[in-house]
Length: 297
Ligand code: NAD
Image 1 (tube, rainbow, N blue to C red):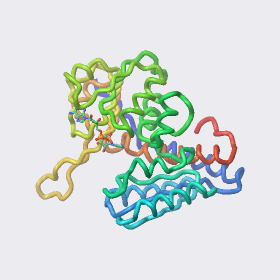
Image 2 (spheres, rainbow, N blue to C red):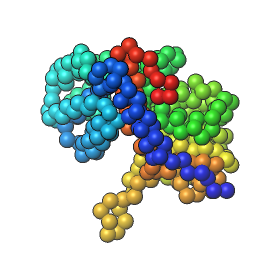
Image 3 (cartoon, rainbow, N blue to C red):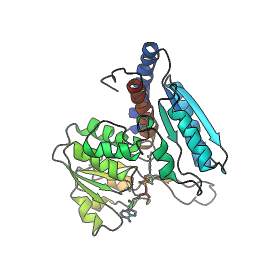
């Protein structure tokens, strides 16, 4: 069997287009564009690239982007004052503080200062709590993107066995919660799980969010499983090259021989994250403006 390649890049492009159309309608109805504020502290190279990409995608989706780039030695008080200003700014619907923050800043207390109704990353404890009890809030973008790919592919997930490998607050735990809400039978595996291969072999749905290159092998998978690979790992460069290849947590080629469907890396889950961020921002804008959130968003 050769697995269907789940094309997250194409799915994300369609979602961004849809968000762009709804955002144009929002601007007409509200008399202003939906706005996303992105705060970057310091000069981490990867973060610079992400923030630049978010800014471009926001503008392309007919929304306003407010970028705040602060020096690496910014104090907690100055950062908190900026967050407070953005909380009170009616042109800002979503606030995203790019992680990781420099070591002297405590990420949890900065995230806690963001208004939960503008927390489009879904990292605030209030939004984690809302997800856990089934209230509407904001769900972290990467797991929500995985869920969209899964329901697009499988439809109803009721009764399916799902194994999520990884228990981080931003991917593994919210992913498990979403699968549970969709009536899957969910196992969360992690670094202390015994005999991980046989746990994974039970799964109709495998979501890998570990950060270990090609750890999940063909013989770990049940025939016909659907595999969502969140991992982004760079291999050491081959001789003569300055950058190594990007791979996921799943050994893609061999897993494709057993799985029914699988996301590639790159081009699978990765592009979904920004698309869902735009979607969450537009949802926030509708709520903040007292407008109904459109059905297909
Ligand atoms: P994390 O480091 O916070 O969590 C990793 C998890 O994997 C931990 O819960 C740990 O228990 C588990 N783990 C570690 N070693 C293991 C092992 N040998 N066996 C089983 N479980 C093990 O990472 P994260 O932030 O959740 O990210 C996971 C991966 O997903 C990373 O590669 C990251 O780059 C990627 N990621 C991608 C996106 C995206 O947009 N596609 C977004 C976020 C994270």
